[in-house]
Image (cartoon, rainbow, N blue to C red; front, top):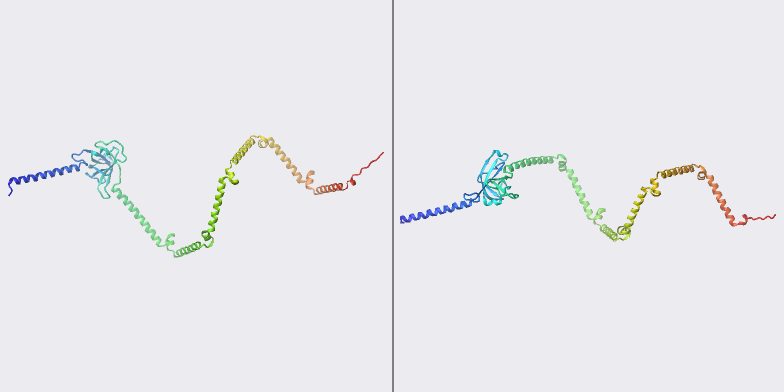
Length: 358
């Protein structure tokens, strides 16, 4: 049987072991709660104001870029901060201060569709100085679960209405109403479509076998050969043009032709300029009113003379219009020609020299 002293020593060792375990447990609790503002941790208090708490509770985690850095310690309504009356106070570990900025933003998010709400801080686009204790972060509105449910309800209503319209449309089609219903339920139309398909099949078979003009066009190599030959000729022509051969090639490549054409254009421009300035006969014709008047008077007189000739007036008019005068003139010319011919044949008959002596 153990002595009383031994029993007391055993109890003392058990008590010491329990105290040591409790001390280790408390130390572990302090270490684990250090990131969220444990009793001996360096703390940083920040605030943010939201339109709606969205189910956020005290003790909810606070994350920075998805990493837990603290907890929510207070959630309350501050009416004077309307339209963002919900004040959320957060306690973070100061070791995360270098990652925070005064222009960092806080938002209320949900852990999954049905998860608890938490505060998420982002510094992705922040570049300001570090916030001080009890500083206010700008709230960034994000859709809450209520917004998601509301939008889902609206989508469900729209989907239900669309399904109702589709059901009505299918009923109309099955009943043969409207153009589409007639097309679907008309057996004669189906027969016609079948006939068209048969005819198309016959046509495509004929084309594939080389029958008809289209079949020859598809299957005859002659067309390809001719096209290839034409392309070869066109290629040779373009090559000759590029090398400056032939008239067209010289037209494209000969610099002298360009110079001559440029000189001709310059001369033409000079000629037109001189005409516009009234130089030369053409310039006077274009610019001199007196010359234009004389020319008009000449043309008028010539027109009067031609009119008299056409009417048979005067010698020239009689010569043009009187057949008898033309016949007499023709007869006279004929007799003159015969006289000249006779004189050439027998000059003595027409040339007689007589000498008389007194």
